Image 1 (cartoon, rainbow, N blue to C red):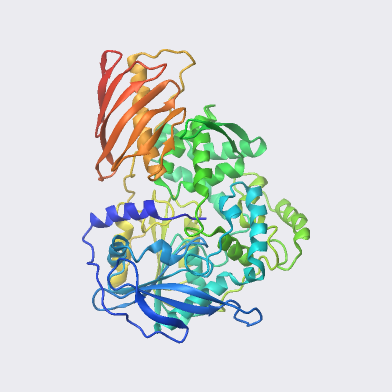
Image 2: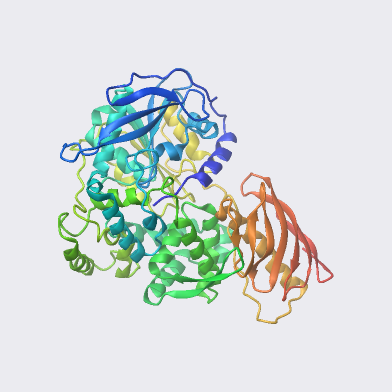
Length: 616
């Protein structure tokens, strides 16, 4: 379930503003008559000049058997200058409201989209059950972390929603999209879908091919996916991890990132890892990692470049017996999994994916009969279905999540097609673990005018995450002139350097000399830069002690330790957004095992005095 795009939009803003220029934000009057389904007059909303908000009312059940309506919140921004077309921005999840995610009311976000889509009027609306369109909020499911918790909480959420739960399928979302199009008085629309938004965009194209002008698909999920066990994701995962880990620092951290993850996941599936982790208040809490928890934590790295910088060293340290760094990352994953329903409605996610399927049982099979069918189906899968992972990994998919969801479960229906013969650009990240590039290859092959752009080293939600600007510039050129993009972007530099290795913790009571202290302190400073990006404006505990807190354009360390007995305190400021980011600051080095002193960072140089000796 993809989360918000705050990090991605920050990075994209850096990329676009360093490119060829940004289209001026502005606007003119509301362009398009309000159809009969639009309730009330268009009104100004947000901080963006010209942005209009309307309500489009749609029936809950289009057959009429179940009464009720849903008011869809729609935001419309006219083109800045002569209009070339109308573009719908379609967010992922399912569960993200597009109006909420894309933020057309925020001038900074609009500046980015004006650059990407010159001459297009922009439309973002919250799908039924998300954002301001009848939000579904199931608090227990929002907070659920483990597979068992999610399965039970999904069943409870279904009971809370009641009979209305049957009307949140992808097919229903596609019909809502057409109702919005008709209400705006637009004949043909372009679609920019991200993640699940690509599945919804393709489903719309199957249902209403005559109304599609072009498709931009970012992080592609074909209509027939996801696989009920996420087997396609698991098979691709080791190679995706190894392809990511090609720079010098990553190779220094591990010889095989994919091999480390596979070994640990299978190990923890058989015997979960349990340990204590530090919280920001200084207390410790228990943390458990089983195979599914580890895979979920790893998967988060394709949306969080700071986590991606931490993962190689942490998993390799765990394989060598130092599990504390990995326990901290798993705890970070669990703490950030709980999101507000306004940002991602997991209730809507459940209502959509559990209705869509596909699953190994008949859609109308009673809940009590499904478990044996599920187990038999998994047992019958051929060797290698999950790549190098055991069959325990079947729980990673939606079939396990939806096992207790009331019928119908797994009965998706999409439009009859055929797909329209329109220009299509698919953008895929080489480090995208949840929607592998094979998905994009499959979809592009279905369109005569289809093109694929692969961006190495970039994870999910590529267009707004590629800090090099290659993807953004290719998208802009494609919209402007139909320019065919390159097959692949050059691999760009990372936002922060990959953590090249974590120090072995000193033995209890050990006293380190200046050089040994310097080695640990320098690694702590570099790890803290990745941790700052990972935490995304939140306070983060150290691995063994202390905490890291955001401080303006930088961060502060308070007795922060990634090796027991060596603690750093001080402040670092971001001095350059050229990639990788550069920082400057000074820290006091102390702790029971350290040779005490002061170190200063400027760019890549770390120098100072420890134990009365000049180092660096």
